[in-house]
Amino acid sequence: MATKILAFCGSLRKGSYNRMALNAAKALAPDGVEIESFDELGDVPPYNEDVREAGFPPVIETLREQVRAADALVFGTPEYNYSVPGVLKNAIDWVSRPPDQPFKGKPCAVMGASISMLGGARAQYHLRQSMVFLDMHPVNQPEVMIAAAKEKFDADGKLTDETSKKLIRQLVENLVAWTKRLG
Ligand SMILES: Cc1cc2nc3c(=O)[nH]c(=O)nc-3n(C[C@H](O)[C@H](O)[C@H](O)COP(=O)(O)O)c2cc1C
Image 1 (cartoon, rainbow, N blue to C red):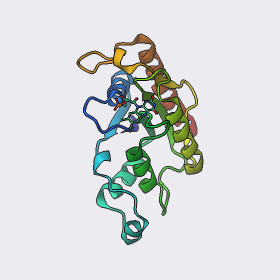
Image 2 (image 1 turned 120 degrees about the vertical axis):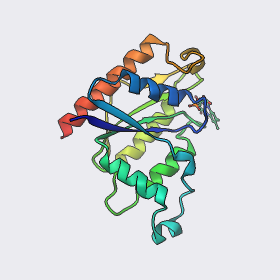
Image 3 (image 1 turned 30 degrees about the vertical axis):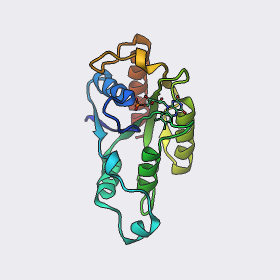
Image 4 (image 1 turned 45 degrees about the horizontal axis):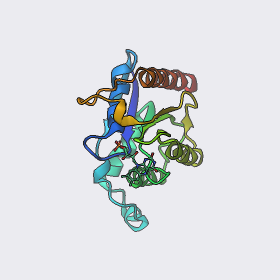
């Protein structure tokens, strides 16, 4: 049976390097792995507890179901001001609310691309911090931090950097093995 992975891109912009990196993950994934993207991040309203008490918005109901149905999750995120972009954190906040917190026990992986030299490391560690509270199970290694992203993709948005390709392939393989191990 195929391993189904739901991908989150923390950037909304068309030319996002992080989306390109997630596309590379899809292309590099081994046979039997399906990576599907959640592309409605821009439609998620700002979190409001009053709204939640009246019922999750439809986009969140759907996303909560998608998270539940996925065998594993992968997050490809930029770093904004040394942390996780608000749009991604906002969606995580919505999905994380009871009942049956859908992130609990979910195997996941984190990767990121940045135009700077650190490849979004700080955002990734902040995301991992939230994963502790959400009781998710992130793969530890490899850490995929694509620095100087402008130089790593071609004009068609294809990842050209061999080191990054190798790391992404390994991350997906490790996530699949981790998912099978967790059962
Ligand atoms: C609001 C904002 C804050 C940013 N802060 C950081 C930062 O703290 N660290 C960093 O490496 N890059 C930072 N950047 C630059 C991003 O790395 C760069 O815009 C990157 O291309 C965003 O990812 P994307 O290509 O997937 O949209 C910031 C960009 C924006 C728009």
